[in-house]
Image 1 (cartoon, helix red, strand yellow):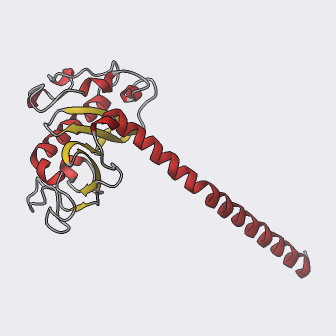
Image 2 (tube, rainbow, N blue to C red):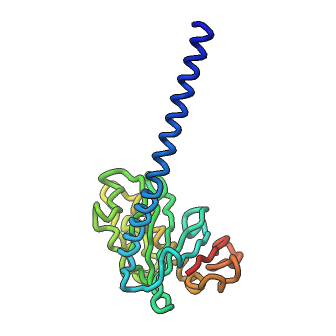
Image 3 (cartoon, rainbow, N blue to C red):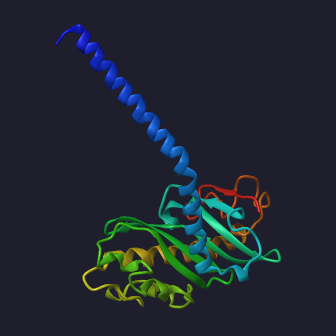
Length: 231
């Protein structure tokens, strides 16, 4: 192959690469906003399933706080807490903890907890569990996840927050115990976290002590940092 042929081939490849990059950029620019809007709408739908709009009058997406507590919330990353209020009074908080020990990996949850410590509801945001077995934690595959509504630290007693196979109060799935075990444990820890830090979680921006917020006590059982959002 002559030098000229090599040069022409190289230029053609460069043109194809530029054209491909331009097409990807164009597609991203025209779909990214729509994807973000769809994700936001899906999240709001799930939030409303746990805390119906009639129960609050603030903006859930603006009245948030980010907290860290890897041991209780299952992740080193900040965990967003959506705070519902009515006439300025706390109604419920929706935590976004992670069950890190699912059979197929981390399971991201929405755990809605009323101000009195009662679970308003639980939903799964994402999971990688075995289809037909572990994925029964999804609301559209079984009613198992609905069984947490109305529960609290005392109902059942804290030592019964386990699957029945482990001596607890919650059902497991036939052939799949690891997944429900992980979810029950994550919800239990979320309830404990909420009970320890409830007042700080509902503190308005700036009233929890600068950049520190929910339970930032410096102890091992408190979050490493919390950042209050604006209402």
